[in-house]
Length: 194
Image 1 (cartoon, rainbow, N blue to C red):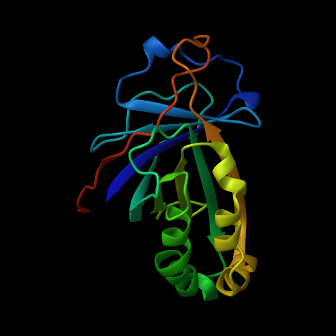
Image 2: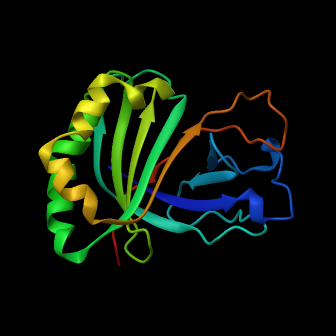
């Protein structure tokens, strides 16, 4: 299992443009939201990356809770779907059991899912992140994906979500304009806690 560093960047509230692709350190990789100006930077290493674009929030450490190879493992993930949420305290155990036993393995088994993983930001909000690397955006609306989302357990847990954001990100072509960084997912080895 792999931990991550995450930096969220909302280009709509920042006056400074992003650095061109060649100026980004190699350990920092990015995903760009399909709808809107949101960009997620993922970093590797035992310490948070030093790059922080002007106006961005601080780097957050996300500890990996679970990682599942997808039905399409080995394919290139052109899209990255992220669900970030808090949950009502009385539903936390149920949420974690649902993700571990049903939801994450079920979505990983859907054709088009390259990888599924869950993370926790122990010091922040939203606290939970579910990340799905997908071979294409159409995976999200496939009958198999929708069936996993429509279980009785899903219907019981989902109303307890709070502060929830669902975002589809895409990988950009390397030849795009410099203001659009090359997009892909990068993880770091899990570090032991002090």
